[in-house]
Length: 356
Image 1 (cartoon, helix red, strand yellow):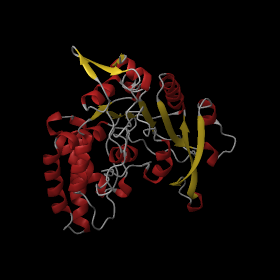
Image 2 (cartoon, helix red, strand yellow; image 1 turned 180 degrees about the vertical axis):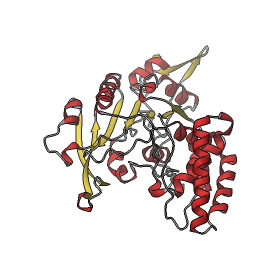
Image 3 (cartoon, helix red, strand yellow; image 1 turned 120 degrees about the vertical axis):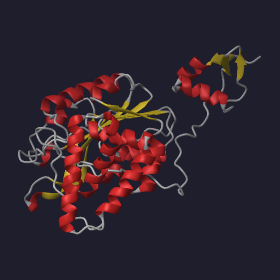
Image 4 (tube, helix red, strand yellow; image 1 turned 135 degrees about the vertical axis):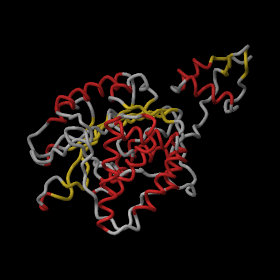
């Protein structure tokens, strides 16, 4: 006679979520499961099914990419970061990115894996609004962007500057007034300005107003409908939060992979780039984040953190080595401009810190 265990017991035994066990039962992926009343029972000697959710998608499916250019974006470090992805054995079923920014890692994971739950957040309200509008109002958004592209591209340089300044002023007006009824327009303006401003930067002054001048692009891709619609589809099951990284506490558990990409600590005194939001992220904040990482580590989450390497400019600076002393620190090469002096540009070291 077969001996049985409950779904809760199977979840504990296989180190996966209770919800995942129920899904496996419903999909008939476990041999000889049965219903007892309204409860699934599973043979005690049943093998944990091989996880099919974390497979790579068919190569014919086009990978999605970030819809914004973002300072500090992780596109060039993806090959290094993906080596940490812990999804292969099926025990990690959730992903959290509390400083999502341009989302290079998020979109890489969304392109490659089918996870149960995903959480992203950022304190930049305009950025998070854009993510939400892409998820929830893609038709209206793409219509606006199509109009902007058709209006902007044919203009000569002088008229492009006039058009750009009008859109920048409108964006700042919406940013200040905060009228939630026109969030779609604000998202469209966010994308337009990102695609046409100097270097794709998002920078605000002390009043919180976007102040980047126009860039010199001949034919900017303002309206990338195929990618935007693909992003919208992938974001449907993503929880999107405007708020501090600490708000991810309830989401993060032992089944979660977390990637923290906070504002980088300046490498030099002159490299303190004006913030992407009105809030600064100083050494005190970096230390608070390290304490939060330790707390999430104690919950059993798999964690990776990226930051600048102070040793690029001061070999004696052990700031991150000290605050993350309990974890593994890897130094990787990246292309960054750390100084207006051309001799200080090129390959520098960045940190990838992990708890596993």
